[in-house]
Image 1 (tube, rainbow, N blue to C red):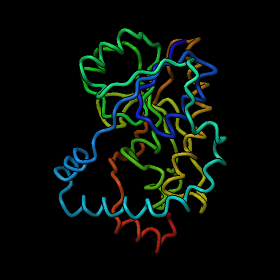
Image 2 (image 1 turned 45 degrees about the horizontal axis):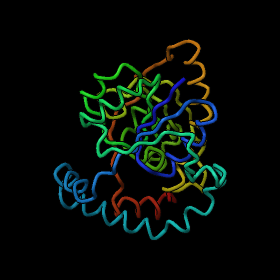
Image 3 (image 1 turned 180 degrees about the horizontal axis):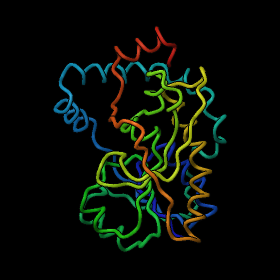
Image 4 (image 1 turned 120 degrees about the horizontal axis):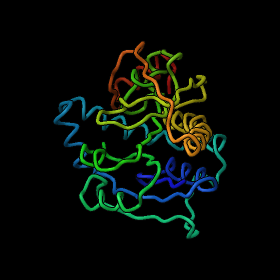
Amino acid sequence: MKILLLATNSETTNILINSLKSSFDVEVIFEEKVSKINFWRRRFLNQGFLRTLNQILFLLFIQSLKPLYVKNKYSFFTREKFFLIDSGDIKIRNVKSINSDDSIDLISTIDADIILINGTRILSKKLLDSIKADFINIHCGVTPKYRGVHGGYWAAYSQDFDNLGVTIHKVDKGVDTGEIIFQEKVEYSSSLNYFIYPLKQYSIAIPNLIKILRKFSVEGVFTTFYRNDLPSKLWYHPTLTSYLHGLIFRGIK
């Protein structure tokens, strides 16, 4: 079964490729990351100057803590999984935007059975409508309550430990609103932090993703469901103010 991964170049992408390549025929399209200027310009227009500035201050602050926070990251995956070694066994292409006409043509010619998404732009309606294969995403949060980014952190921040988890879902035209294929709770621990939540979530999701893909290769369909018992909310980056509040008063890193 052929798997096409549409992704940005990141540690979780490397982990995903290294975990799948021994079981499936994997091809990769790397999308160029959105420039920081364009990203923050859109965020400013969407959320206003003060909140956006507070988010930028948070990211500057959290980067200073990263060396301390990531010391135990190899407890979730072996060190080798974090690095992508080009051994020639995986075809890798690079595009500026996965939503461009050229990219859509390229994706069509690959004719994958399943398309996995990891860290790309929101997929355009044209892309979704042009490809017959299902698009699948690992989302680091319990949908629909923790859509958007950093769902694990936000669940912990909200003291909502029953909904601290990970979701594998179909991709539709919304943001993390697609049919759910798999969802599982992640046990909270004080050792978890902003950088480590996603690794913990991926360590649960990837073995289950492999099982799901193997089952799909036999049955040709996914078993899906919705969580109508949960509210739906889209989350963004923490602000420095909210992060310090969670750290000082709730012990959430």
